[in-house]
Amino acid sequence: MSLHLYDTSTRTVREFVPVEPGRVSMYLCGATVQAPPHIGHIRSGVNFDVLRRWLLRQGYDVIFCRNVTDLDDKIIRVAASEGVPWFVVSERNQRAFTWAYDQLGCLPPTVEPRAMGHVPEMVELMRRLMDKGHAYASGGDVYFDVVSYADRYGKLSNQKLENMRAAGDTDTDSLKHDPRDFALWKGAKPGEPTWPTPWGRGRPGWHLECSAMATKYLGGTFDIHGGGVDLIFPHHENEIAQSQAAGDGFARYWLHNGMLKLGGEKMSKSLGNSLLIPDMLRKVRAVELRYYLVAAHYRSAIDYSDEALQEAAAGYRRIEGFVTRAAEVIHDVDAAAPLPQAFVDALDDDLNVSQALAVVHEVVREGNVALAQGNKEQVARLLAETQNMLDVIGLDPRSEQWRTTGDSGLREVVDALVAVALEQRQAARARKDYAAADAIRDQLAAAGIVVEDTPQGPRWELAR
Image: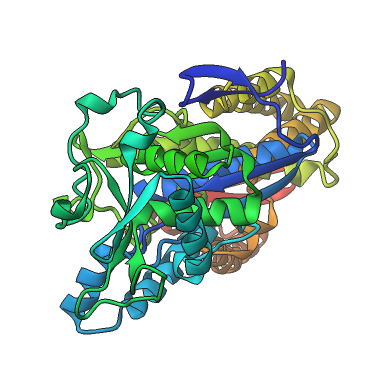
């Protein structure tokens, strides 16, 4: 079975065939940086990171573009409330997003363009649309004429133009030919940043920037465009309209991840239910949070609860426990060991990570049995399979990511401190002071550290 992906534009699972053999071009709508990220924001980045890793594992050269919207109405409002320039807000929150992506093990994008660095490309796109009769200037604004594209507008979101409401993206509907027309360019207003165009100074509309950046870095026709389901309409619908109306093929596959909700509501700062990444990393380790975010199918909604987060963390620790114990016996892991076919089939079936993780857990169960039986040959094979599967999903506890960044640094400090305590315990046992040895073990247990005596010596793990 080859890779098949659910394409929102056709509402079918389609075989993935890239535009160029051996090469995949992928664009992900990144952050609008008016505030620091919560886990709802980062879920998209983590889900598409798994897709990228799977494509890389299959031998593709992947060009991954993830944009930053560094100016919009919300950013302007936040900056005004704080009495600072807009770019102060953007830069601060962009750094917070980058830190969060790094903490959760996302590979850095091939290119990460900022919208306001691409105004010339946006002006050129507007000029092309005007030349083809799909856009018009009015009162310093520039609008896309949806009626001129009526035969195709609404296909991504499965809507009919006659049933659509006004765009609601400006307070200047009186300047529009039709209230459903959306703004490509917003004319200058007092106190707002502006750039020059042939139609007057102003700033870009939200939808225009992604079309300009995607085609600049990936070409007029590229493979995959991704984002959250909340972007299907109007953002992605408008991207398609303005890009294809200008003459570009644009994205061939549209992938959308489900929302992360709290109490059934979309997670948002306005609802007061944001779970910011630093707060989450006080509850669980970064690798455990990544596991939680990828464990559900990327298209499904997640209704967050602390209980579900802790269950996911415990599930990851079961995998981690086997890898740690097996690595004490097997020192050289075969990185070229084949992946179990059931794991491959799961990921090829619309990136079904939940099913792929079920395969991981089954291999781990077999590995624990092999460890108990002392079957080193079997342990070596199952450890290689487990680590190779985890590497695809970005969850290998022995990878450089989890040994050198974020909470792994804290693990190294704790490991060193526990090692001192275990040395004292071993010394007490050597002099047959078993009461002191037991006391040290009890103190570690009270601190949430479980000690296990093995033929290779004592080892520890956090209590589950």
